[in-house]
Image 1 (cartoon, rainbow, N blue to C red):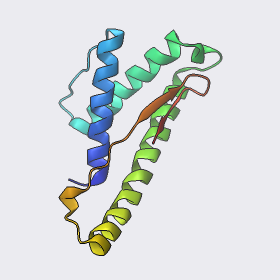
Image 2 (image 1 turned 45 degrees about the vertical axis):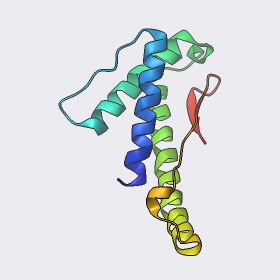
Image 3 (image 1 turned 180 degrees about the horizontal axis):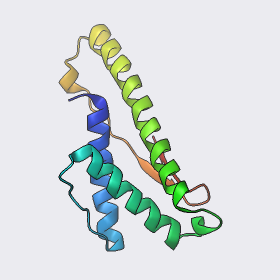
Image 4 (image 1 turned 90 degrees about the vertical axis):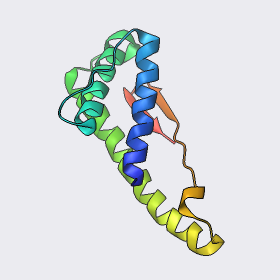
Length: 117
């Protein structure tokens, strides 16, 4: 599985955990997992914006921006992971399956964005 898919799945797991904490339900879509993750992410960002101090001056367009920024971070980290994994496999003679990358997600309510590390 490509790293972007793995990272999106990690975000999905995080999203479902957050939904359970705030009383929301993750809604599966017929359009596929990618659309479902985006749709549920936008719902989550909307909930965060309206229940935290991020609601000061932000509107729905900020939710879309939060999603775009999250997606860019995941893509960038996936590209780095692809290159880094190749280097580790070749230099340390590891199998790719031996390398596990776990992401951390943190919400910044002042900026209304999620940081990925």
